[in-house]
Length: 92
Image 1 (cartoon, one colour):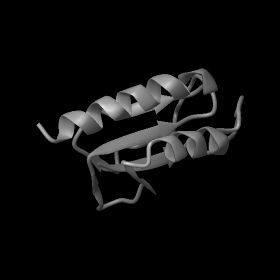
Image 2 (tube, helix red, strand yellow):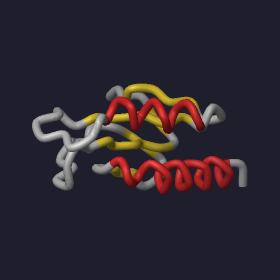
Image 3 (cartoon, one colour):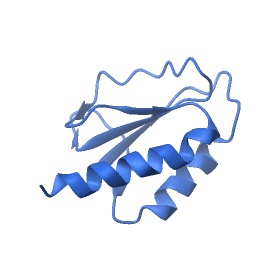
Image 4 (cartoon, one colour):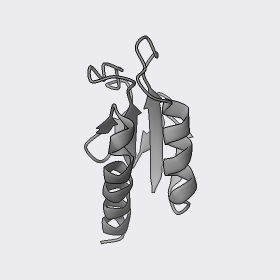
């Protein structure tokens, strides 16, 4: 599964977004993560916001599945679970 990752601008981060991304990426080595680029189709898009506003725009990216958003480090486990679930469903 190809997953594009979009970060917010970081105006009000309440946790280390890069550390959260590395943890997710390192533990899900079956998923191909890349920084999101326009005109590149993704199976999945992950938006990593730094605060509850999670205001990073993502409409310019193309993803097959509904966007997954996180804005707190407490979301790491649920994001990993959802990505694993969607990755396993991709083959169906």
